[in-house]
Length: 286
Image 1 (tube, helix red, strand yellow):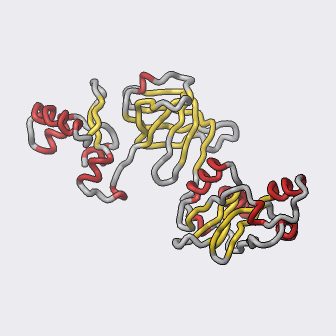
Image 2: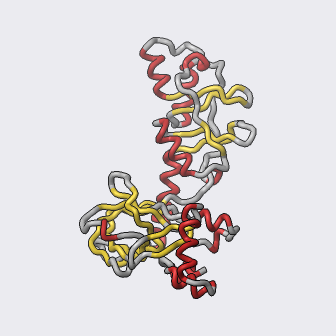
């Protein structure tokens, strides 16, 4: 409760006043709570205590009432040892630069002016900020960053972006016939579907390989070289992005809860969703 009100580290003296206990008793209890993973402690005159996510879960506090911290990392990926409790944007009107003021918990003296940091992701907006330290206030626990880059991935289900018009190819036609389908539909690949079962993926690369080997007469079932990568229609688009990146592909076959193909989602679909707010603003400004 004290942490929720202050949004900063809580002193043992404040806890003692709130609970009607002796401050020494509180200090004796805190190491036990820390060992249980219920609190985090920051030593020193500017230190104090803050609850962990485990504490919120243990006391069944609803998520909407929880104050979650945001991690900070160095460019090398190492945890910087401080966490963010609030982010305030500054100078957003400037066409040349933008700054953010970070309210943090932890020892900011370990962070150097000019050091580049990665902040996030934030719990709800999934925002990640890359920036360079241009100022710090050790007394009030603040870091001023000059923003280098801001990325935010919207929370969206695959079903909302996927194309429900699924162009597929049967396994028992020739590669030449499949090439004709890809050409007419102006697509680079198509799932190979036998009845309701997904059995493969025929790509432009497969067609080119067969053409170079004089095997365009081959059946599609014999020519597919890539195992299709699928994603559930109710999964998050962030997972779709990760699957595409890990597999070095530009499309995923979308399946329902019975693993039946129901659509396809491409990099273009994801890019269009990311650009949607910019397109809306451009339309309004016109």
